[in-house]
Image (cartoon, rainbow over all chains, first blue to last red; front, side, top):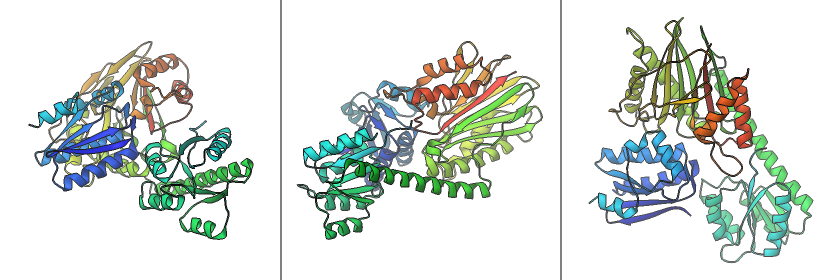
Length: 112
Length: 375
């Protein structure tokens, strides 16, 4: 449980293994990504397919990461949406901003 | 009743674990288990307990080691910690207190004493929190910093009210503002800074200031007031201010002209507005979260409101309320609550009552609702 981190070539993959991703986990994700960003990773995949709920603080970290990597020609792609999370992304119009995929391998391919 | 306090019990002896589980559950706590310090460490991150009770003598990682590991992680170091031990030797007890623990419980103590000690820790935490909140609130009051107005605004032909409840009574990221442009025109703003409690409150104060500035700039020397112009101004200001550009905000801006009976709305990443009478109409905007991109597009939406119709601006804490089964309230249920309450004299109070009933008063975020009724 928690947030699993993997590296595939030059892609950082954060897998959020939480039913509810909220303010506390947001801090963990932020730190993990910041550490890897400092090492030069700017292609990021965040897999949220396990999440039933994401609060606005957690979403804030995802949005902020996208903003940061986009400035250095990187990208952030999302994987998987359960209905409530999908609804939240739709309501806040964030769907327009993120590229999303059903599986991590599809997201990896999109970076090629 | 508020959510039950959660206790993590780290204990390798199943009989003791069962006994404490029985005692603490009966006293109204939720108990989760771990059989040693290593498992306990994972559970702390996974379950986020309100208090940890740990045995000292355990295989793999013992209680002292476990406590030291927690103290090294500032995210969990402050969770109140209690040592549980079979022996009450002076050295053991002193070593425990050197590791910033709250209390020491001897396994042979009676269940009543154990519960009394745990209750007393929670009481003392509550008092400490209340006193800290009171002090900061006093300071904020002295500086006249408010993110939600004390009074409702007056506007001919309309009745405007709001409800605001910060998460755990600590000022947070939601803010509400009313800005009168002239006798007939009122700007209503609701915002939600991503985050909770004081951290978000600091930014809410900053954003509320930006909104006021943006309204002044966007509404001076113009033929027609436009929420879109306000929104674009705020987005530009935020995007270019590196101190706050990494903290995102959702915002709803409504301008009411009472003499012309015109309502205009522009939203940025906000939840749809609800227009209610016997049924509910959802009004959606297109704007993205503020501060995300300089190129974000915002537009004005005209809302036609008839006598006795009511327009609601809400923040996410409302629709994300959960019942005892963990089911979120959602828009449909909120709509039903509003329609059922709207004919009642104190409809906003009724709505709040229903929301409290639904969630068992367990609010997990700031809650803000602005109610605009056309008389």
